[in-house]
Image (cartoon, rainbow, N blue to C red; front, side, top):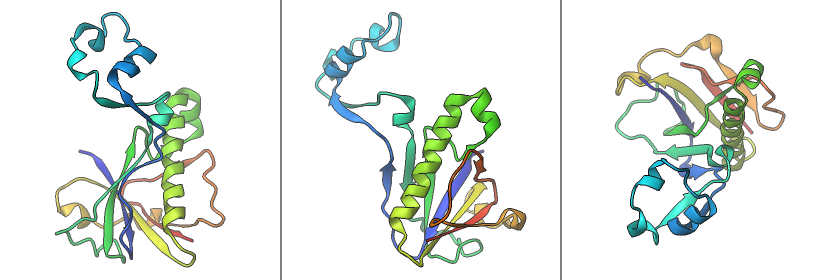
Length: 183
């Protein structure tokens, strides 16, 4: 199973990929800049027929991390968890929605990728929300359309004010957690 993350708003939201730092170039140019190591897949497979195709190039793993927003959802009753009608799926792309000091010590790269995804999430929310507006966040395990039928864990409910919120070193968007983000 997969933990899915959602954002709800009272208006349509921009969708797509956010926060990635990429360069688009021809495959042949990318391979010249970053030659494949011996015995790697690009070194052992004939790729010349693809040389003129464009490819995305990222300098670091952190550059490749960000958000992917899709939706809005249709044909699902989300009213049990959301007041707002427009519900979108939010994917951490290359990282996670969890950071901790312990993770920073034992898995520093994972921490950096998680921090990048969370930073991009709150940057996105800050960009889409006008003063006085809010968005709702919710996370749940995938169980088909039933995913919105189980109750949320009200002990985890959280209200964040973007005007004063600072991410810090510890944050986890947890399963069945409902978060209201205000601006």
